Length: 448
Image (cartoon, rainbow, N blue to C red; front, top):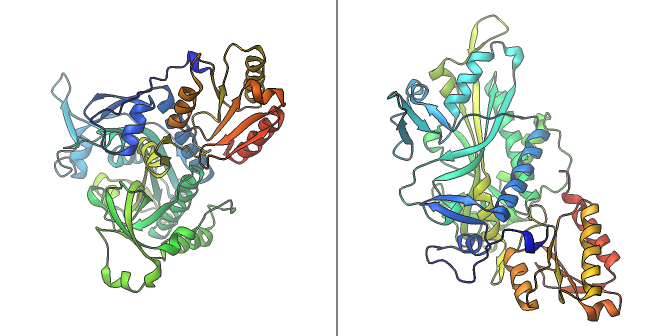
């Protein structure tokens, strides 16, 4: 993409309503625009990042054997009355009436709807296990929407639901999701710590939430620093292997890590003092096992091997896709702007032409742009007739991980400059070598 043709409405000043780093930088980088309180339009740059995150989620769900689908954003209140949650959910649920006076709601979550789909189409234990998921817009009418996409009213979320014959099978699904989520977050350049949590209005006895450490996190976090040394890495996982999934869960959850809601001071004191840490964290996902709560309420049964009806065991699993955009920025930025991890960057590299209109510089930039594009990478070429300082400031603000700087002086020596946004380290090299380096850097991040 050529920047002269791209819609990137960057702001020099920070809007007064932005209270945290991610909100400030998303507005300044032209990623979002507020439509009303807690509701945002996603502009091209922000939308590209949102889609990158969504793609990673889809890829990792597919590896775990989960099937995508799509449910409506508007639900009938009748299902929620059947489950008993319509009156219990609270004022966060946006309740509406259609033109015929029927009670409807804007989906905050979809346990009832997916259970209704299941009970209509699945009748035998032979059809289990089954895990379905969607990535869809949700709405929760927050009393005080704030912090941009971190606590908005409308948000983009992956919500998945497993159906299993026994508690043992459902707990394997729980472990499988935990493993899948750890890999998902690592691919986004994040270290998300799984922590025991409160189930809230979803219900159930077993639940973990995943938190990313960041100074502006809404939760206080108490943890053993040894947990941050763990890495999922590129280890091979057989998601059907019960023991392997349980082993990974144990590895990542035996170290002390809790939010202020579930913190146990006495247990924390047992952690060696030099490893005790207190920080802030941002929730980016949660998994639940809630047994037969919804299948009992909504009559979701299958015929067992003995011919008798058996209520299915269920769980649900959420990832805040739009919230992750803000969380990544909170965890990865500096005073000059965003620093995107390679896995989610909207463009793989920026090309800065220091002397637009110079035949040699223009030709070298065009050659770099064409070569990178032909190799399947997406460069953003700043071909504007602007001063070099302004071009560098824009690239730093929008946070592309790598920048290739092209100017007449370097070209006389046959080199361009490749700069890492994260470290600030620059290296001069021939254009062909810069291309090879970028291909090598992004090879692990392409295609899942």
